[in-house]
Length: 423
Ligand SMILES: Cc1ncc(COP(=O)(O)O)c(C=O)c1O
Image (tube, rainbow, N blue to C red; front, top):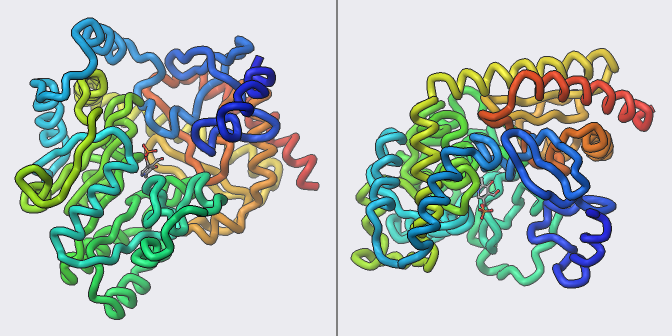
């Protein structure tokens, strides 16, 4: 059972989990297996999953096309550390799917991709500082752990180098005036790295023209613009948020949906920048597992599937998401909660505040005690949303109308319980 497994885990795994967001009081449930839109717990309870590996599982758990391709590759070997044709095929698919990008380097995690993209930007511009946005999360290393979102926002950063963190300048999201002010003040900025849709503070949507203006300023100031599309890549469209909003960054990082949850990330970008990567270029990047045949096979199978069903997939995700969020909003209104909800395509998050959520500081003012109560009540009714207010809810291609009806019903019950503690 989850409670006894967790008792064992906390003795030998720090805090009992391998990533902080996975812990919640009193203990997290343990997963037995996943199928489609559901996770089956060790207790054999079925949960409809809106966490989906924090956005990674766009097609659904154990998705047949991906799993059968991976099984076939397993029989042929899982790592060679020499080039394979599948890597080339994946790179070609990425260039075909993502407009205006010219070269690809494959890696394993989102953290690696953002770290190396920042390094590229410093080498290309010969400038040192980076600008990041309050509440954006780019991974688990010193100079992006400056006002990060996600579970990292409530952590402390003992062990980080202060000297390194000082090279990171902060901006509030959705605030162009502060960008102008910052670039006037500082001429040593190599890049602005941003989640084009902020998915690590719940969900915050860019205001009209925000990303366009950011592009114009960065171009004018010879600062590289990096879109961290670890979450939004393939989720908002095949070309990610860049294609969705029609704004072309210099570099883009991809990870989660690229391989339906297998560990694979990529930097895609303009040739003149990407060519700086070693061994021919001067920017070192290397990894034993980069381009391993298992992840690459999963990546090719996932992207081919997304490409084949895209005219059905994205409208379906939006329709289901509209129905679900519409149902949630109706129940919140009925019970007169101070609440707001942000949504785009298959991503949404709700907040217990009546303030419109446009940036990280607004999120921090929402009532997170009520969110935690909602999480716990939904879990009792078989619905798994992220345990933290700072994460986003996702919908997969495998979710169906029955899942959505059950979920709306569960929200109705959970909201009544939340109301009891609000009063
Ligand atoms: C936008 C964004 N960038 C980077 C990362 C880091 O990715 P990883 O956890 O694979 O290192 C995350 C992880 O959630 C993310 O959401």
